[in-house]
Image (tube, rainbow, N blue to C red; front, side, top):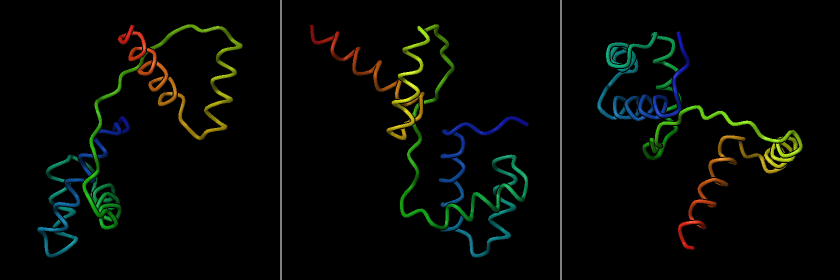
Length: 108
């Protein structure tokens, strides 16, 4: 079985949070999550445990798709080093850089 996407996880956490608010028992909430989200009881319980600590719903971002490009080796090394040093994932780093470039180009 494939891993859940970030958006799918966010939707499941929000659903688990709603179930905890409405449901009087965790076992009932687990059963409902299993039916609604097609997850195992163990996964449902984990989502509910995580959702217990949420103060507000999790934002569901836009879906991400793979985008493969070939870059010079030196540039890739520098980007990876920057990502490690800042704690930003490669995907987020490249997304931010491309978005900034497109905004700058639009202004011209």
